[in-house]
Amino acid sequence: MSPRNVDRDMQHRDQKISDILDSAVYTIAGKGIGATSMKDIAQAAGISIGNLYHYFKSKEELLDVLLKRSQQNYGELVRELERLDEPPLAKLARLTRDWLTVEENWALTMIRQNVRTSHLISHQIRRDVTDRFTDNLAPIASIMAEGQKRGEIKDGDPTQLAFYLVSLIQGLTLQKAPGYEVPVAVEAQSIVNLFVK
Image (cartoon, rainbow, N blue to C red):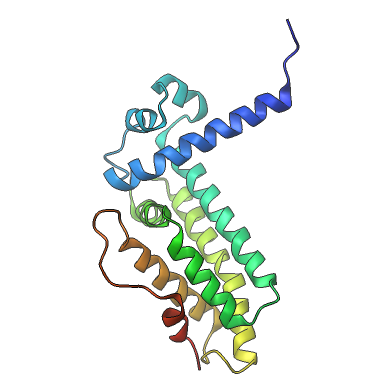
């Protein structure tokens, strides 16, 4: 019998968790937090409910991990965007375009908002989701401030402007639920132009 490969086992576990989370996104967004059961998530992931409980003790834990992963990935993306050697308006257009083209963002936005407003979810998780959202505004606020220094972006609190932009693109994302899309073209540059001085 060959010895276990701990690294391979961890990679397999991480991949399985990622697969479960990916499968859960549309199920939770479509049914809602309260109506989605662990059985629903297991079915979507193509695993037994016992196997699902091997990875997650509860639906709340799964939601916490799902949103932490999503918000941390987004945070890395906006920090990388902030460091790009591009004009601020180009960075904002890139952020807007990229956000609006990721198919699952409507579902993640819906889940995030449901978690923040659901009394079924612990106060701590709701607080953590809100704190990560707020922290992720900082790189965008920095881009806004850079644009203000260059005289390209409207005056005002850069964090407030970042909040408005993110809220706008997330709100538009919610209009892209499959099968029920609002048939109006959304252009990234038109959104960014709302912030131009």
